[in-house]
Length: 116
Length: 110
Image 1 (tube, rainbow over the protein chains, first blue to last red):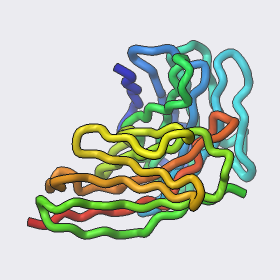
Image 2 (cartoon, each protein chain N blue to C red):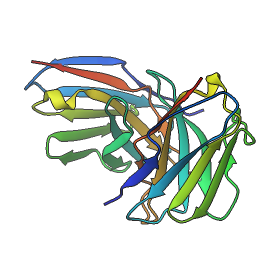
Image 3 (cartoon, chains in turn cyan, brown):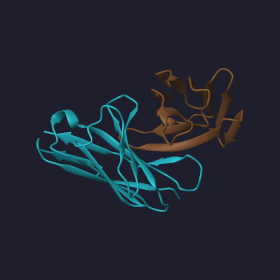
Image 4 (cartoon, rainbow over the protein chains, first blue to last red):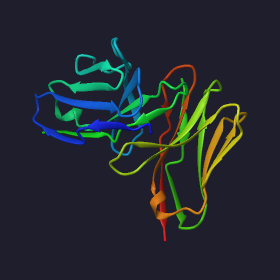
């Protein structure tokens, strides 16, 4: 149980294009999902908290127009990196919090974004 | 603000025990967690402990919590090569947010 699927696992795109990353909770419902960014050999940096049916809450320093988050259902959140540039290249990881009560986050496998 | 710190590296021989340490600053933490990350992968929840507990054991894993010293440790018994990975401790308190440590790279050699 508690499986989170993240897709795609790796994407290479040209500078200026937009990339959408999907995060799905497969066997549980999640009103709250989280998007993290991880630089090589570093810890996870929380980018935003995605709430089903409402606007995402962004962390300080994260551009909301650059990183569009949509959480349209209890099992799906998407992160769109708009007009991607090489500095956006990174490992993006999502997590979903089980509605079951405990504050447990289950993580997707991550998406490696390479912007040329 | 909240801060979670870990040592960066740990190297152990296969079959020995590994102890990964973590210190945190927020005394109002409610849950503390250990996650494992293998290369190029997401985070796998290993175990968690509620802040009113001192110890939790799950098969080869033992978590010790010293709330007075704000110190958390993860002991892996009979460490195997498959345990080589980065281990993150994390804390949460009154919000949904997790505050992650810097991660400890565990290397297991034969």
